Image (cartoon, rainbow, N blue to C red; front, side):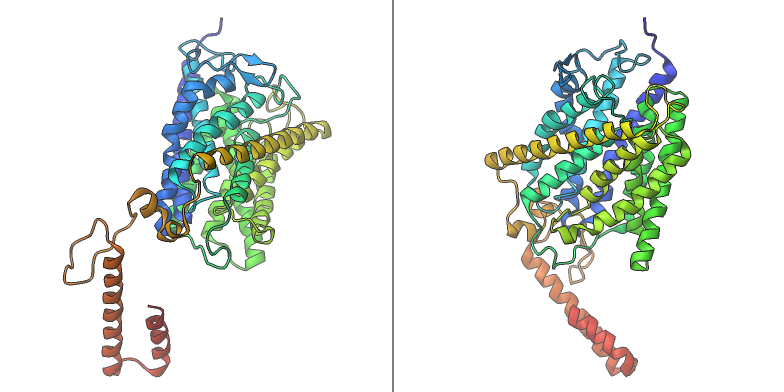
Length: 461
């Protein structure tokens, strides 16, 4: 009779909390990368998944993923009714409810990852409907195929995925590609510049993701044991290697090592090490990370040539990083780390490739079908006018940042401003700037060499 271990239970519950914290981290990471008029809309796409997907998981998702197997394809949906105080076969030393809660957090963050691909152009109501259907019809079946006793995992072909390279990242990356092809490009892409509005926010979000990923990977050992410690170390080395690999490639290619590049490279490494974390030793983990950093850097650079508008590089980081990590798991896995795994071999690489292909194909096709259904029920994409206005106002009626008015009403911070009020404020700012420039010119404080850049600033204003 399985016995509950309090240490294992404590670690898995703590890991579930860490994975839950990754979703707000993702919100900040994505939110900083978009323009300021879309930051709330982007943050909401991550945050709302904590509620919507959790309910779907409770009602049926958990049962489909981890219920009694039917033909190596699906589990019997039974909600969380079978996940109570007693252990389950997948985690014999912790309560079933702890296992279900831990897996719930994986289900939550996966559809939120997809949102980065179509950031700044999808209606909020359509997005909510999409993630509910996607988590039920795509994520849960794939989780069953790999982890729940289905045909891709140990009971089937024997593909290895310790913490979600195929289940989370490849499925989300394939769905992201399908979504951007279905929804189309942002207005003005690629002529218009889409510059991240808050880079420190990006770095903070990436740091939270890195922190939470220790629960994501080391928690997947489902116990406070040597395997968890090994996964903890390999997780960090994978991220570190990718950060170095990305910045090296970026410096060689563009002459600068950027902050956004450092954050994106680290995330790419975390993605790539996810399937391998519990199967490889530290040096291979570092090599997997470095390879992912370089490969993902060039993959992100290809999107312009290929002509698709992946707003926040979900395809280049999560799909390409997930595929890189899944295949290299087949190369570097060793039974010395995890007796439940396999040794690296050409045959194991083949098994990994099958899992990659099946996951990509199913997620891509199923996502297109779901998007079509959602679009028939409610229009998916915002109008060009709403896109220009920004999703914060058009979808949520809010603004992320307010500015103190520089006018006779100085000192009052408006909760919201109409377009007419904003135009008046712009005119006041231009007149104030012009008055300051003219006063300095008249006073003789500006020499001719300095006057030219001042005039350029005035013309831009």
